[in-house]
Figure 1: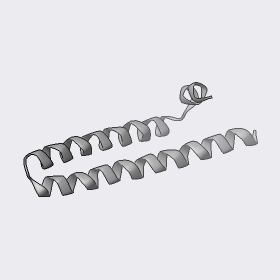
Figure 2: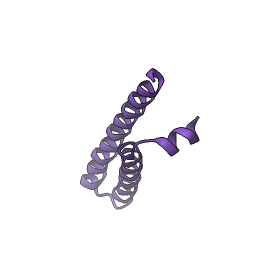
Figure 3: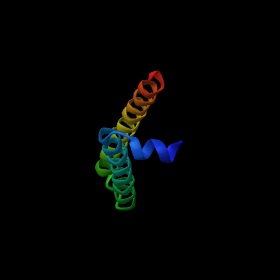
Length: 74
């Protein structure tokens, strides 16, 4: 099911998934750098980047759900 959905998934879903993973990854790296260098502002800013990645992830789940629902109605 997952492999079939990914192959037929809309481009917007794929962009959301990779964008969310990228933002979460960058946020984690920024958080590690901020905490190891005792740069509190960078560590706090990284939380916003991680949060944006999580929001994009939720949007991707909604897009996937709508696509599956649309396909089931056919």
